[in-house]
Image 1: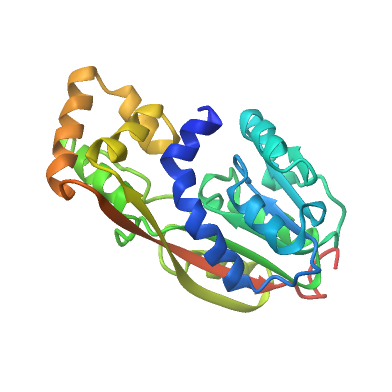
Image 2 (image 1 turned 45 degrees about the horizontal axis):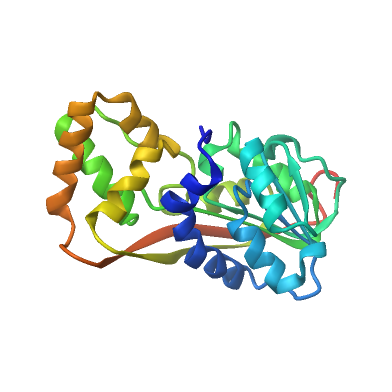
Length: 259
């Protein structure tokens, strides 16, 4: 899904991570002496926030996209950054005090297995947390704007509303189902400043994620139509867009398998 260069991801979604990742870390309440894992690290947005909290040597990160792993390693050379998948984490049981995943559970092949793996590598009493954009109630304005325009052109477009974690309470429900306790269910807010409409539109042309892939599959004429359908949905000149993410966290119980 994410085959674009890291700088393309940074322009498209990474700019949201700059404000979302600190919100996630604050919501979890990471101890400054903790050892922490970033699952689905991408180019390292959350990794960097965690490194500022606990120090890079206490941070591990993993992502299946080799270009993201390479960039994350370059940006955070003291962190333990590996290429791999959430469903089969390459660390022993009870390695971390907390395992976090930012905007990733919806892209896991098996989200429940990915969450179970996050719990497995987290010690008893440690925290597992994840967040995904609100794509069910339209809380992620940037993506909602794009998909609204895409559906205007083609009413059959599904978009991303069927993904795991994008509806209220879904992440928390899954954390309870895998046996975590003291589960917290809430929302986080991110925001991005745009210079103008072109600053909003151009990152969609980088073919990042489902929206970018959808746009890339259209003809040049259809791409232009989607662009022009987006334009009246946004202000003229500089503007700021907010984005809501659904958040869930839970504490690893000693009764979990392998704990």
